[in-house]
Image (cartoon, rainbow, N blue to C red; front, side):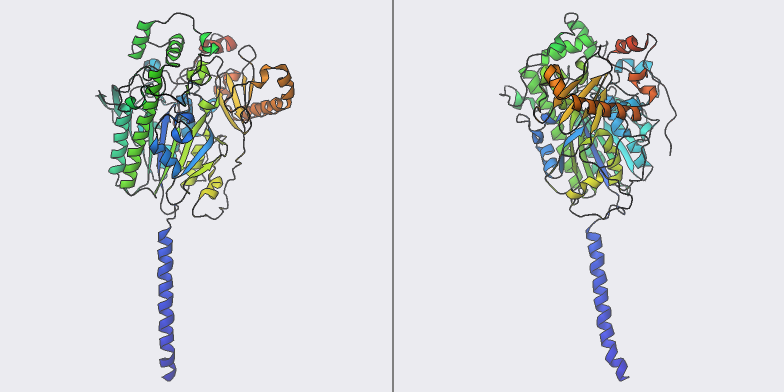
Length: 558
């Protein structure tokens, strides 16, 4: 009895200490969310034609983008993320699939004027694994709000979006009057309302009313700032225009129109034909588009318009992020901000897309896109990354970040860069057994129909399909970040850089030899889905029978 009475108090104290220790351990484990057991939401914001230099945090001194700037300050701002192409339909296809244009087959914007000629249910990448479908099949609720431009406007469900709202065209003919299309065949007219504000409101409603136990993937595809006529030509109606009208511009380029553009103009400006095209009542020809770009170049009202449309997008992003915070979802949501690709807004004497040059010019202003990641509580604030990233890497990274690194996007040249994010994390995660390494100094690749390019830390090199269409170009982006001097235009420079060119040229050939699908390899007689900018170029190369394709293919299934 004496022995028991002596031991029992000690056993009680030991049990109490053990219970307290277990309580503390439990509290500690719940204070740091485990993304494996608590799936992350993803808010994926994609803007339209927005170049890095059009944003405050990336150096523009004229525009006011406080919300994007704060997003960068609260997360990681990437300096070297490169689009796969200089046009919206190809890049949006790459963002969904991780494939190059010569793999998914979309080489150019899809021209809205051919909508009635394409199959009724045509969706250009539904035969491939896509980001939303992958997440949908793993328990996510998926939604898309905004620009589609990947086939018929009724088809976002084909790539895995459960809920969606878009508008009737891929091109923004008018910010203020549009036909809205939603899942279930719902269609209605939206008049006298800026489409960016409308998409913002829809995104805010989605987040504010979200009550599912499932994580969500929301892709918010703004169709601004757009950068192209008719919407960016002359004064703008929006609430920010007055702030920029009459401004003494510091970051807007003032250069003469490039001779390459002028040389392509074949007939005089036709105002009536252009107005009909802007109303969607006629097809805008290349000549008309070039004339319109020429009128924007160095026009102060158009510059103010452009800046104000960037401000509209920024304002919308601020409201969407505020909705996320109000819902208490900041720490459980990975926010991704990027653009499909950039556009020239005066640089190199050009306004608009890469393809307005003939042959295409793949300058950094169009190819090096903004990219920001924010995961409150996990990724350190105020980080800047200079790792070299291809647009085809993004889809791998997003599925890996939320715990599905075992998913394979077949034949994609992309790789997840989650492993390279460890230095930016507040809570260091243990090394995974099958974790994929990422070379932060890797070469990246892009293509635009007859032009292909490779970019590394020092050089940007482009080559054309043959010497009759155009000659190679080489830019030293360290010594010449504005890419004003093609090093291959001078005999002595060609000799000096011959080894560099040979190396880059060989890498470029090997990459496309490995990753191109012969069916869509324009350099070997393959076709393109939907449309190309200059079809006569490929008919001259491959015969009069060469044409684009639009065919219903079996949808991808897991």
